[in-house]
Image 1 (tube, one colour):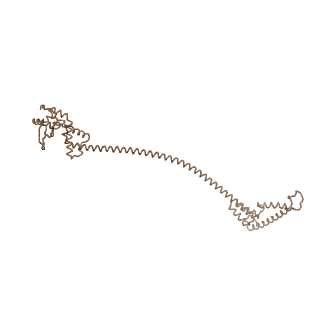
Image 2 (cartoon, rainbow, N blue to C red; image 1 turned 120 degrees about the horizontal axis):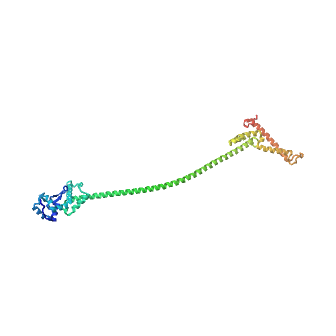
Image 3 (cartoon, rainbow, N blue to C red; image 1 turned 180 degrees about the vertical axis):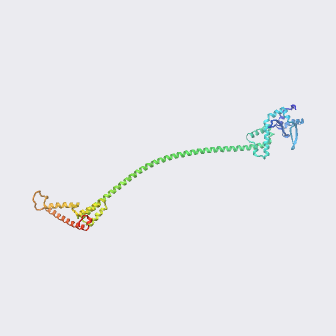
Length: 370
């Protein structure tokens, strides 16, 4: 078929693109398209009637509506201006076909959200439907695009909320980590300060303990020393008491002091309980005092006094020069002689008493008298 010379005007272009012609997405070739007569631009309808009269475009009635389509697809390739229009709008035509098929699938699947478009495809579809050349053709997909946009907004809001939640969670975790680090730092500082205080207290307690130990040692030493001195003083007191009882008993046995032999022996026996060193000495001294009364310290004093009295009685050494003759004794000499007689009498009495005591208790005195 030879190239057809057809009128060139915008009215025809708005009728053929995008209503009566499109591009096959598989072969990328122009193909005819069925359109309703009512959808065609009003300004292009008089021109299309001429195409119908020349049998380049045919009409038909379907479902009570008049439809129009190109009679032969060869016209789309032989009409140079139409081919140029189709080449210029090839991408939009393909997208418009895809969008219509997607809307139809969404309607067939009961408007399931899984069939909606989103992201970049939704933006491109909205831009295409907003173009003047495709606004009327894609008017029936506005609901599809509106639902897709609403779902996209919800998804975007949910994603924004999720990201905000994640950011808030990350911020909370960071703040919690910082708070934990600050708490650990504070706790570590407090622990170090407490450890320092404990060390200081430990040093003070050690010093106090050392002083207390020294004081306790000094107290123990003082107590032991005092106890030892007390024991020594008590020992000396007992020894002194034993000596006093022993000498008094021996004086009683020697007849120098009154009290009797029983009391004397009682005191000597009592002296044995006052000190270990006084036991044998007291018994032996008592027996020796019975056998040798002149050896007792008190008796020695009496015996010395008796010797002086006898000398005075004889007149020797008493107010007279040595070698002078013996005359009448002095009054003091007579008194000394009387005292000497009394002393001899007492010694005789003590000897008889000793003999009587030894005969009764020979083993007690140890003198061996029968």
